[in-house]
Image (cartoon, rainbow over all chains, first blue to last red; front, top):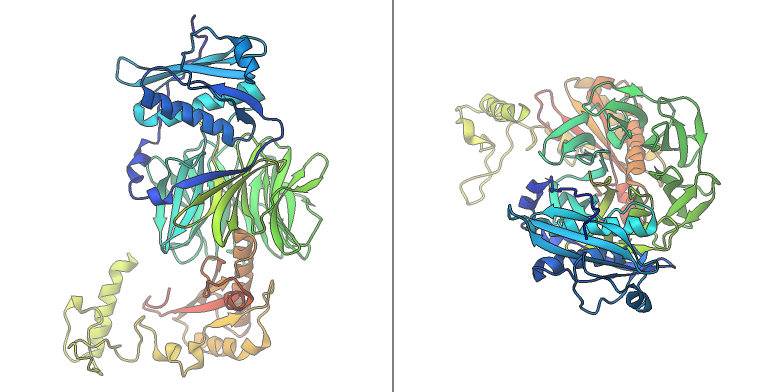
Length: 428
Length: 181
């Protein structure tokens, strides 16, 4: 049997990060699943023959990813191991309750790297759903596992998986602020920036190579763009007053920013290299937290122009302003979903700050979290999950909630407060 | 660049106040008014300036100008009447000492959005700035910024702590570039 696979040869392009992982093991994120979807797809991942240690890393990564997503139920593989070309007894697996099954193998290629091959089967129909081969080195076997999990997720749910994505967040520990990047499962945490002054509002460039954020290292808020592979940092806005709340345009060329150079916080756009500053709109109060819609046509933002902070929207280069939120006296931090269907924001209700999601077609609002100090929502690139900062037991943790509120995960760091999460784009 | 200038300025000031020139690396070593500590090294401030190089009247607790914080009510950014005298004292000093600059840092309590709080802190700093400029202080002497909820004075999570954190602070810098920011 020949694999009808694409063979994406993949390399981890952020190798320098691994150099920083020493000494921050105590800052590793751990993930706890606190809610799952209603109709989970039963799936079996059998062990891959070949080097047992490598097989274990890959298959356990795939299983953990699928389970954590809340959309799959893992059916016991009974310690069976067989490769992607072995004949499958579909009826047998179907009777064990598995609607789908993945099998694979791990081999060392001629240049000493590892090749992980796999194939996914639909046991109901008794057909192959395709497969792939990923070449990697042994230090990046987990990454190969995430790629396999993404393949399975997409084939079985019809939407793209986000297991190969990364997240950024800020850890406050022992008087220091660490801007960290981790895989979406919290593993491989690496510190991109360490500071004794606060770091807030990180946002990923659409290509995933840079982060824009606000750093207080100059005793006031200043906006930087930080290239992750090189560590190079560029000041994008350091005007008189405060510079904050960067939001990337979908083409990655511009940032919407908030400057107070003329008094109160006002919206501007600026090129990613700091040139071409333009005012977007003018008001006599606070305008902040600008975020471009996925198509780049609109900017959602927070404003107190109506007497209390509410979400508004305006054309990307200005124009008429339209109010978006109406319920309650405090609706902030708007984040349009990448698929353009929903708007996540933080709503204060009876003294609790909670994650709310608005269906932009019907304008229906649903509170989707059950915590009460929610902040800084960030959509996964497939729009399904929303990462927020919240507080549990007096400690800052991250929580991922599905946009329908059903699936919940908690990510925490043993040694400190975690805040300001930003979910990165798809793996490129 | 600024960092490099500081030792030079420092030694210039020290030399100016001292009868005997001091080596460049003296960096705050005693010049006058020695107070014995038993270590043979006294920590001393030269010629009426404090450790930041600011005139004593800005930091001496007996001086009104040493009071640098203005507190605000929840979600409010009006400078309350009880701070009018304090603001007036700073306005008078800045008008008489045009070489001095102030950094106004607005702060908020920890509740709600970090970015919205940054904007609210900015409004507080702006309110103090407006009070100062109305009293004749030049805009060029003032920069108002916000620290939002990021630098709480009181790390607690109750109203007692929050009321301490809804605040604007006045930081000074002299004409020589030395000071608190």
